[in-house]
Amino acid sequence: MLEIKDLHVHYGGIHALKGISLTVPEGKIVTLIGANGAGKSTTLRAICGLVKPTSGSIVFCGENLVGEKTTTIIKKGITMVPEGRRVFPDLTVHENLILGAYARQDHQAIEEDIKQVNTLFPRLLERRDQLAGTLSGGEQQMLAVGRALMSRPRLLMMDEPSLGLAPVLVQDIFQIIRRINNDGMTILLIEQNAKAALELADYGYVLETGSVALAGTGKDLLADDRVRKVYLGES
Amino acid sequence: MTRKNNYLYTLMAVAALAVVVAWAQTGLFGLLSPWDAYTVRIMNLCAINIGLGLALNLVNGFTGQFSLGHAGFMAIGAYTVALLAMSPAVKQMNFFMVPLIAPFDKIQISFWAGILWGGLLSAFFGFLIGAPVLRLRGDYLAIATLGFAEIIRVVIINVKGLTNGALGLKGIPVYTNLWWTTAYAGLTVLLMVRLIKSSYGRALKAIREDEIAAQAMGIDVFYHKMLAFVLAAFIAGVGGGLQASLIGSIDPAMYKLPLTFQILLMVVLGGMGSITGTVIAATIVTALMEILRFVESPLTLGAIHLPGIPGMRMVVFSLLLIVVTLFYSHGLMGDKEFSWDLLFSRRTKQGVTQ
Ligand SMILES: Nc1ncnc2c1ncn2[C@@H]1O[C@H](COP(=O)(O)OP(=O)(O)OP(=O)(O)O)[C@@H](O)[C@H]1O
Ligand SMILES: [Mg+2]
Image 1: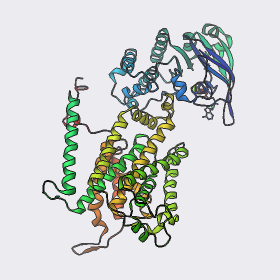
Image 2 (image 1 turned 30 degrees about the vertical axis):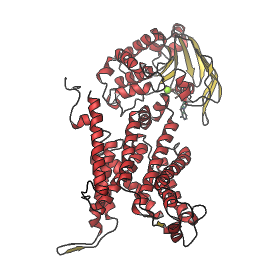
Image 3 (image 1 turned 135 degrees about the vertical axis):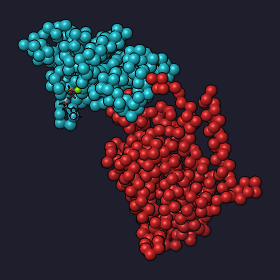
Image 4 (image 1 turned 90 degrees about the horizontal axis):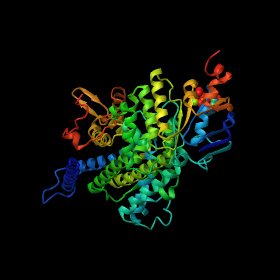
């Protein structure tokens, strides 16, 4: 579904991505793990058109994405849950959800989808008219995921959805990701929580300073010695 | 059910306003206007300032782009209207130092067309300046727009063959009346309400809250900023034109930063991001501007004699602004809006049940 080949990204003088290639097959969960500054968020930003790659190709369902505007890319069916949630703080939960559906044309179905998001996150329904900025961190994360789902993406990309959440909530979030995936959504997941991510994912990539160091199925990577040492903290 | 009532209420309010305007302007059924020309003039200024304030609120309050270029757009509108609506004879009297260039020395078009051109030209400049400037953020945007307004002023001072330079223009025909200004304020309110309730309005607020997240939602950030900016420039241009034709004379010194500041004051006092707040604050500030004139004139209180200090009113308003931002930082209304439901406290039962 998504095919990235030899992608390079520079921020001024910083060479953030040094030719990474990865594939996200339809209906699967693919995870991207790696240390801080490895280039995970940069990869997502490049896919969304928020940063311009220096070279390389990004192809989504047979269509080239490099050089396209973010608006166009999102209309093609890719949505990102950005790093650090970034809900709209002075707008209500409901308004945030409606904004998630911004790029969509079928306005009749929006109310229907809000109902669906609300069954996924009952907490959001209770707080429908509360300002998003006053939600707890976990609730904001739910809102960020719910908002992303509102665009009915074909590919959902999440940048560290478990960041800053209590272990119980982390489990919840991962369960929800599983559920969304079972409903047929393709997911590209970035995680610091390597163990949980690899257990969940069909396929994983390990990024190290801008290049893919390892790739394999979730199971294989979990069993890999280097992964165990560096990312799972086992000896 | 209640929605139908609300339309009815709005319609009644508009009708009542029309009656008041008709009465104030021309008298009604033989009843003379109860207000003298001076009061009617203040009412005109209130209405114009409502429109100007809403335009500034659109950019600064709803879209979160801190622009200080309002006076520049008003100047463009004012000079356009003056040059298009004055008669050739009056123009000749004005331009005694440097003659007015052709074809402006000969043409005179109707007032409404002049107003429209003023708005359009201002919007065009908004488009030109917006393209580079709206890529800037925060302080830089404020400085760049301020610079734009100052450039407009300097150009007006120097292009004497078109603007009569620092002497300004006198004898602009006074077409502006309560009908014009009320329609201007009313249409601007209507436009703003419709815009803010639409998906455009939601996109503008999203940009204000978090530009990156807005972009990630698929909102074309630059397009929406431009839309707000150009629309605001249009409204400011029209307002500037109406004001010029109300006062009857303009000169470049009118369009300095204090003019923008005065409008900004209304927006901040009323609440950034509240249409209702701007309407109320514009009315109060405009009225106070006149009422407080006495603080600038010499005053004798018994044995104490105070000389008049020009600019004293702005000191009063600046203090007011400081107090409001310190203790009441969201202004009069925050980002709340008036609604009939609120007025008749016909609220939904939500939240009461718990
Ligand atoms: N806007 C920017 N300007 C300059 N350098 C940047 C910018 N954004 C990221 N970088 C650099 O690019 C590299 C990759 O950053 P990126 O955000 O992709 O890391 P990451 O893998 O997401 O890390 P983390 O797990 O900490 O979120 C880092 O060295 C970072 O300093
Ligand atoms: Mg990151």
